[in-house]
Image 1: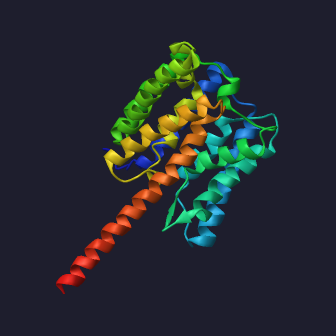
Image 2: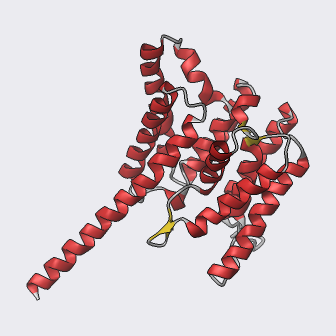
Image 3: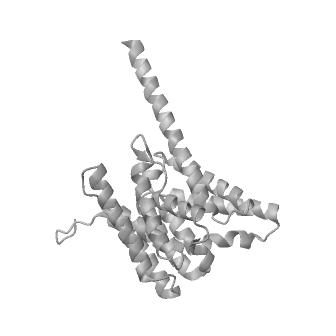
Length: 271
């Protein structure tokens, strides 16, 4: 609550941050294919969220998540066509309501939508990193700002673990491929990784509950990404999260189920 009686909703922090990334990047480098494309991505995501929430949950949703999903799709997908932006946003939001287990959606929505498009329509879309360079100074500003925000919401350990793992496995890749260490590290300075590190792998709805678990999962994502890169898979980080994230959540649910079952058995034995 401010001195003027205005309450700030923390759910707006992430949308404001991702908007600042978009505005700064576009003013500096002109990254957008068109304003219509990103507005289409955001509009589709918001509309899908409103319709599905009313139909399946009988309530109006808070739209910050849909906005983040739509703008992520609009930034990360590169294509001169319009339909991929709408389809990717629709897949992104629909996955939250359809691909669920025990009341939770297993995949990060934006990551799911983007992976689906990269896999199903590789002739029509490409990720942002392929078409935008790795200019260090603008990315450094974004990293500093993003780190402060992520620190405040107590998720910095995820980002730090993943970046540390990326550096470690980058060194290992040099031993296998013979490429220079800087060449292996250069992808992480690109704009795609800003969204991947600060928004996708830190998503509270699709990460495990314990701090140690989140650290282990972030390290596992970096490891699986290394395997994909060694296999010359272009979209390695997206696919690594697509594989590791749901497996980690399912393992946590299984362990929680065993714990509840054990506690129930103990109570029954004493009864």
